[in-house]
Image 1 (cartoon, one colour):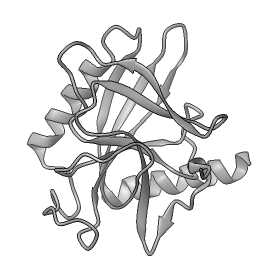
Image 2: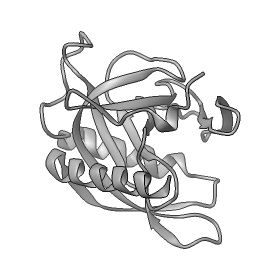
Image 3: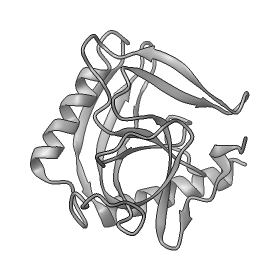
Image 4: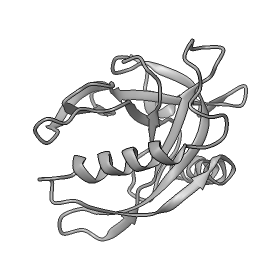
Length: 177
């Protein structure tokens, strides 16, 4: 199995997202680089499921020491380990505090599969519509219930601003190797 963390971030201007938790899953699944396998992390609060595919952007590093997070908006559910070439829509800026830890930025980047690779109509070509923004915010607020984590939203970035932040994450990954 490949080391998903080290896959190239981009291909032909598109950003790769490695799916960890597929749409409809009631538990968080994460890639473990030590075993190179996907494993169960925790259940979501009762009645919740992931609204869209969730994963990470390879060859990036965020302030929390993990790869940057990605939410892929489309109508299908994939499986852990699928790599989707995506168009970037924007990012939800998030300040997250883990139990007993310091508050760190842990933004959520939002994508849709590239139109040539997926039959779905894109959500939008360059942004996340307001109604979808509110739904995404509500999901992330609810998904941390019972974990001791807190999240505060710091606004949304458009695709250009989010792309600059991803490039910063790519540089951090390269410097960390």
